[in-house]
Amino acid sequence: MIEYGFRVFGFGALGRVQGSAVYRSIIPALLSVTILLVFTYGFDHTSEDFTQHPYVYQVLVAAVTFLITFRTNFAYGRYWDATTGIHFMLSKWLDTCVTMAAFHYQSSRYDDKKPPSFGKHPEIRRAYRVREHLEFSEFGYLEKLENDINDADQRPHRTNIVGFLSHERKKNIAQEGLSIKNIALVSSKRINTLNDWVPSSLTRPMRDETLTSPLLNEAVHLFSLLSAVAMATLRKDTRLDNLPFIRYQAGNSFPPVDPNKMDTVSLNRLLADLCFILGISRGKKYRSRHSSIRQFGVLGGISEKEVQALKQARGEKAKVALCFMWVQEFMIREQLSSGLGQIPSAIVSRCFQFASDGMKGFNECQKVALTPFPFPHAQLTIFFNLVVICYFPFLFFAYVNDTTMGCIMNFITVLCLHGLHEVAIELEDPFCREPNNLPLTTFQAQFNEALLTTWAGFHPDSFLNLPPEDSCDKDEEMTTIAEKPS
Image (cartoon, rainbow, N blue to C red; front, top):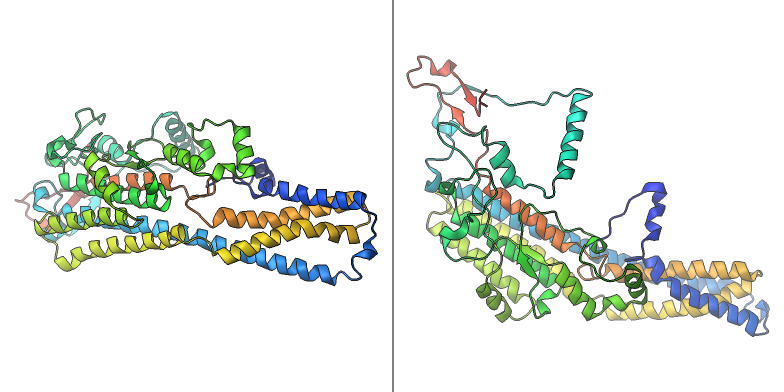
């Protein structure tokens, strides 16, 4: 996906070659102009030899315009359907994991760690929070905001929600000897031993291994793997010998949505632009190279056994179905063993419904990925594009007396109509048409970071300074929630 701005009235976007329909249409437009020049200076004819009325050309131009416009409209519909489906899929799978985490925090594992509930203390009539508030002044707020932005730009890596909670709020959330410090991230490789999930080389300022949850660790890995396999299937990478999966490094910068901004691009820019204009960059060799550069990150990495199991699954749906079965089995196993707390089964069933809705979104995307644009319509459009290139020179020869003006008008007209055809080609396959394809690796990284929020634990302001038990008037006693030490 190409990001562009609107500075200088948007004219800055004209210099972009990769992904442009304008530059792809220059060669057909020049070919049409060449036919006009050859016909003008190579043959002794007049305009009266071809037509007596422009209505003949108007019918042809109208028919070709409608044909190309319809194909472009259908191609944009496919692109938008794919965009909607991919976001729907990720949102539902994220809902499933977040809901599982919320249920898990109500299990007996956290009985001595979770904050007290208002429902268990009906004597509390009032409560207030003590928080820091940033004074909104005309200069102080803007200066602090500018300093925060500058500090963020100077950091080599962004911190994620895990590091933020454990570092910035560790003083706020300590109450009565309890500390809600975030548990460790997944390890650098897939390990079957649960005790090894917490790496010893964590750079976090604080961590509490007693709060480590193997359930959440496994949950975020399975959902990250499911999403990565689904996106690789949509990008047709599962047909390759090597699956494009790597261990996700939490906190690193997101992959750029524009392939041209990848640091690992080794081709000379001029050569790459030329390959795009000529259509050479759409071959299998270049697609394999693109997939090897833009790999999908999986939280916790991927083990050899998982790779072997995925390779044994045949077909476009089998690999995703296998990962989905792993997720379903994991949720059922944890529900039966009270890993999701004493939540009624009817409520836990929403997790399965959300996961199933995510599979529906995946199948909607796969419908676009596996079903090409109908061949009869594509062939007809290609044929009439050739007609436009060869026939329009006669139109401008017949009705434009000045040769220079005729060449300019012929070039612009063919460039416009053939450009619409190129737009349709770029949009009709939204997962593979680099660089106008959807940035799946960026979506995967953002999905991984969203999964990590399930490790944040309880809300840091949920802990109460309960009134003393010997208080004579508990109804009038005010309770401080998450009071910050002075």
